[in-house]
Each structure stands twice: as C-alpha cells, then as structure tokens.
Image 1 (cartoon, helix red, strand yellow):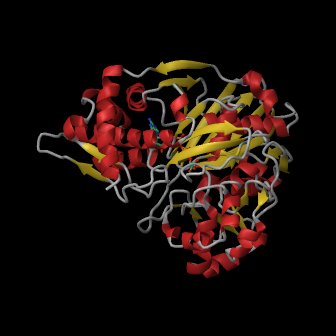
Image 2 (cartoon, helix red, strand yellow):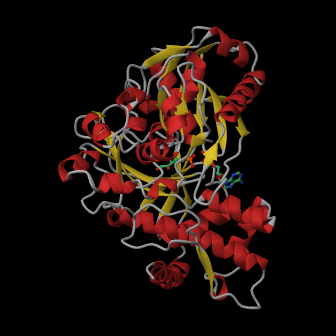
Image 3 (cartoon, rainbow, N blue to C red):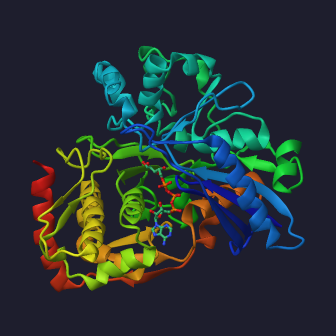
Length: 478
Ligand SMILES: Nc1ncnc2c1ncn2[C@@H]1O[C@H](COP(=O)(O)OP(=O)(O)O)[C@@H](O)[C@H]1O
Ligand SMILES: O=C(CO)[C@@H](O)[C@H](O)COP(=O)(O)O
C-alpha cells in the first residue's frame, strides 16, 4: 500500500510515492516555464503543468516495482487562477500569484463597505484570484465570459485527474473571495465586485475524496482507474502538514519560488495592521498567519539567468564575500512585494556599486537582499519576537552557506525538517486521509519527520547584519 502526492509548484511539479509509515519510496520532479509577456504579468501554461505531471508521475512509478497506490493527494501554488470551460480546457493561460497587473482593480476592493472588507481578513494584494478575475472581466471579457470555472492551480489539475470540480478551504481562503469567519465563499463580496458566483466550485475538506481517477487520466499516468483523489491543499498549508506542524507555536519558513513564514492559530484572528495573511490550514481545524515574500527564489532564478551563474557559484558567493558585500546592497523588489512594511521599494536596485566590486559581490548582495526581505516578513509576524528558532523547509533551503546567511540575518536558529519536500509530503498525507488510512490530520502526527539544528547565528555577523539591515530599511522606505 502506498500513497501518491503531487505538488504543483510555481517552477516545477514534485511527485512522491510514500508508504503508510511515512517513508519516501520514490520522488521525481518536472519543470515548466513561468512567463512575463508584459511587465508585471506572470503566467504559466496549464497544458505544461499537465504534461509535466504525467512525466513526473511516470518517472516516480518507474523507479518502483509492484507498487499498489491506494490514493492520490494534491497540493499547489496558491492564489492564481485558471479559467476553464465546462470540460476543463483552459480558456487562456493561468495567471499566477506573482502577477501584479490587477493593481488598479484593487480600487474595487477599497471601495467595498468596511464590514465586507473585514470578512476577507487579509491585506489586499493584486496577485490573488479575486482582483485578477476583476481584471479579466474588464480587460479580457471574452475569456471571462467563455469560462465555466475559475480554479486554483491544483484544483484545475484535479479536474484533469477526475473530471470533477472542487476546491478546499486552504486554497479558497487565499483568493480574496472568501469569508474567513463564515468559512465559505464570500457571496456578497463576489456580488459587490460584479463577479459571477457560479464560476466558483464547491468547497470540500482537504482530506476528503473529491473525485476518482478517470480512465483517461489513469491511462496517461500508468495507474488504475477509480483511485480516490483527495481535494488537497494550498502549498503552504500542505507544507505544515507534511512537516508535522499540527499545533500553534512554531514558525515555519518555506523557501521556494516565493517564501512563506507561517504559524498556525486556533482562532481566525486577522492582523489588525493588515501586514500578514490569515488562511485556513490543511488540517480542517486551524487557521494560519502567513507573511509571504514574493521576491525569493524567483529573484534567484532571475540573477542566475542574468549572470549565467550555476547554483554552486551563486551559493559559493555567500561564503566567499564578506557580510555586506563590501558596501554593495541589493533591493530585491523585482515584483511588487506583499505589505510587510508600511512602505516598500517599487522596483529592485543595486546600491553602492564601485569599480572594485566583482561578479561574486553582486551574487552575494542578491542573496543578502532576499534574506533581508525575508527578515522584514518574519518581523511582521506578531509572534516573531518570541521565537528563537525557525523551522526551514522547501526546495530553496538546501545549501549550507545560504542557510548560514539566513541564520545570521534573521538572528535565529534554523531547524531542518527531515523531508525532501514538505508540500508534496503533505499532499501524500492528505491522500492517506482520503484513502481511509488515517481518520484525520492529527492522526498523522506520529509520522512527523525529525527536526535537527541546521544553523545557528554567528553573533559577530549578526551585529554586522543588523547595521546593514537598517540601511536596507532606510532605502526601501524612500
Ligand atoms: N539548487 C537549487 N536547485 C533548484 N532550485 C533552487 C535551488 N536553490 C534554490 N532554488 C530555488 O527554489 C525554487 C524551487 O523550490 P521549490 O520548493 O521546488 O519551489 P516551487 O514550489 O516554487 O516550484 C526555485 O524557484 C529556485 O529559485
Ligand atoms: O504566494 C504564495 C503564498 O502567499 C505561495 O505559497 C505560492 O503558492 C508559491 O509557492 P511556491 O510555488 O513558491 O512554493
């Protein structure tokens, strides 16, 4: 008996086959493109998601012989929107969380009555399904009208697997179309924005069976038809479940194309300063506060392309150049950042460049700039000052020199969670709940991966970084 987890990330799809004791039997991944056809736009082609999923599932299964998959679970990048027709065909490419074209449409949100805005319990940012649908309705009315469904990425993928449409609370709550108190689509807000309510699917618990693998999808993946497919969860929520984070307290930092700092809460308490998000967790009982960083791995991807640098070269610069890159400071605002600070730079910059700076200074400064951005987000979480340790997860957290830089800049101990990919492990656990292995998320607690100390802040560097961080804050506030 084994479980199949699929995580539809921003840069790649990850697949895991896991046994019911929580051991990883096989992993695979397949990449796809994120494109920016115009400044501020961020899109992916769902057809590439589907072909990458087929390739990754086939590759994961090919490494195993005689494996019997009991159920499939999903997780995925959050906030974006796929407009699909009745049969699930996308009517245009997907718009992603890093897309900022709907900035002007936020005005529609700002003009909602306060009692309605309060139900959203979240800061208003453009890269969420709600504002992006307002943009589509206004600027691409033909696609908007052709659409039968407006889906989050992993919900579209499940549609391909099962021919059934659904979403779950963790993804629905991250659309700016959800009432966090009532735990349902915010019908009156959807109506006030002039959006069509019937675009949004039923909300089904993350660990419920949302459909069964269709004969067509089964043939493509090389699996038996009729396997139960769990509704699944948003990637940050799935990462908490996958790392065994099932109670309020610890703060977890997930580094991927974006970076997220999250902490579970027992109550749906919105951030009164409007700096951090509040969403539903994957366990069906908690909420979580999240400070999300747009400019994390996507800036690493950009700098690698610009400088034609390998991952090793990029990370080697963390140790080969002294803290502060000898006066060079990078502001990582390549896309509009989420509102952790009252002000933030509206574009990226290298500041303090001199003739003696070499390529590795630029690479090093980029790593530092991203880490300063993560520190800003961390400090926006109300519990940050009480926390001396952070749990670290995600595909962008693997290099020791980068982890050490993060520990020094955040001035926190970093714990590693012993799992190759947290979100996809969460997806596999949700498959287990849908498949009847566990009754609920709490029952997976005994499978939690081990944590161990991975990096401690070096105090002499912490002091240096505190000064450079002050310079960073001054510059982003200008
Ligand atoms: N050595 C590395 N190989 C691949 N990606 C890396 C590496 N180091 C950092 N990254 C970053 O991590 C991201 C991939 O992490 P992952 O958790 O798979 O993200 P996602 O879910 O966004 O696809 C990439 O966008 C990249 O910026
Ligand atoms: O935007 C957020 C959270 O607000 C991310 O959770 C995205 O969902 C992307 O995650 P990765 O694909 O970078 O892991």
